[in-house]
Length: 276
Figure 1 (tube, rainbow, N blue to C red):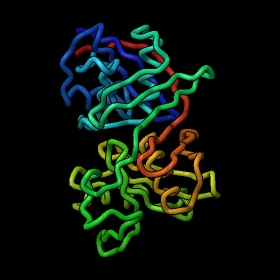
Figure 2: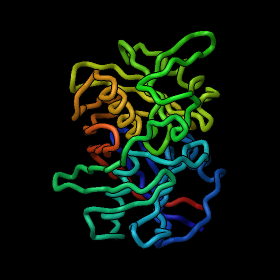
Figure 3: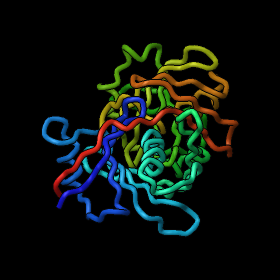
């Protein structure tokens, strides 16, 4: 059986998008791993599935699989591509779209300039909701890793993030600390790890090690989590411009209990078919 797909990217974070409304298939982790291979498959950071909603108050169901075949709760760059995809494929005529994810309901807004703003919902800061093992909620935590004490913020944007402030992202130990922190026992569902360099009150640079995918060129939820951590600790003021290796995102957050608004581009690369 042949499946139609679209290759897309959000500032370099790349995706294979499958419409499972007009075509039907049962996707297994082995399929994801095979298609994700950049030498023998399509090649991508995540697979995005567009499905019919399970409740009448949302427009679509949005599922995300990392390149290792694991299903995850949320992907911000993918959400922008999802919005562009369903409109371009005429699956909806709406410009404001409500989507259910494993991490909760999010709202996608297509702007006249082609950018997409995603209402990512309020960040979860209570340790048990991240999930993160800590006695009480705090702006930052001391975490021991292989005998070294690290200071980090723990934030969930529908998926768990650890944010570490660094002097320079270019020399940050992303590939050394990232995979070790991903599996830290205080994060029972593993964790995405952001390395944040604050430039000034409104600009920062960020690299992200994503659980199940490794370092990606951009991570939308990682940018949101980094902005929340920086604003909460008094380092920066909303709105925040986050520069990732693949491009720039604008993040707005008014404080605890308020939603995080992420704005950025989404681009189609090509159309193709794969055999299931």
